[in-house]
Image 1 (cartoon, chains in turn green, orange):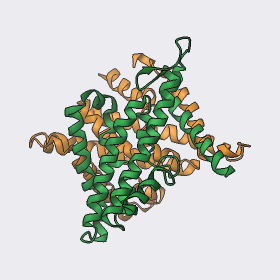
Image 2 (cartoon, rainbow over the protein chains, first blue to last red):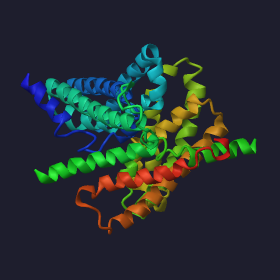
Image 3 (cartoon, chains in turn red, orange):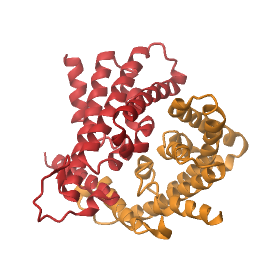
Image 4 (cartoon, chains in turn brown, orange):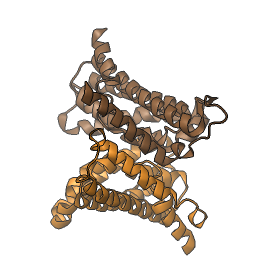
Length: 197
Length: 194
């Protein structure tokens, strides 16, 4: 259990892919205009990460070193195709909102990066833990970012009205510039806290 | 007809700028924009590969995947084709054009995981562009990519010598710069009714 939990917690906090490792930015910024989008996008990526990490660590003994990257990409593409088809069938509205960012999970640096840096060198259980942890760390940032932008830009959270009706929404926060602005400030806060302790 | 192509081009170049409005290929936007020269090299390499990749993926889609009813293999087929194509281009340039290879060779491996290339291939398919439209669209997108990354690199070179608060040094200030640039590009919205 500990072998599963340690990499899992590590992925959520200490090595959070977005804030610390600075990878996987595109979908983070693009789909974070509302908190609910973050949950769907994050869970889709978590599924792909966990699945590809699991499969890569299962077959790592038989994969020749020279052609490992194409093999990893094929595995990841298979899982992304599954997510793409499942979402198209069962959550068509969300599929339209997330649009091109679902197939683009395949080139998300987090997934290939974890397959290469972690799953290729570690056991099955650790790799599964790492995949889920990284995926949840990614999801968490998506929800936080989406929550902040939705709250300031629309006055709602997960679609519920939070701000009083006298609040005038800052539209810019749900437009593209707001995404860059929010993540810039989140990172600055993270640094400020890190610098103090 | 000509206006249609022009609008397609301007739309991809400015109105829906791939980096600042659509948020695709941001890893390279922040990763290789430290100096003007590297960002120009990256822009050239992206332009070259993107035009090539969107024509190859168009042919793959219309002549192989659709006739064989293998549309569901789109994701796997495109990513593998593009990865192979980039390797091939790298070998070809190394052998036949050393000067061009020196200018953009080191950026080519980065491009395999550059989402912009793959995204344009998907957009070409989902918008039902014909062959000429997809070529023009890819030129517009890669032009927009080059424009944004070169401008961003120019600003970042100046920020490097500016007195930035400690917590904002490095990436945070880069994000805020990108936010202001994105705001400027938002001004193109509605241009020619796009």
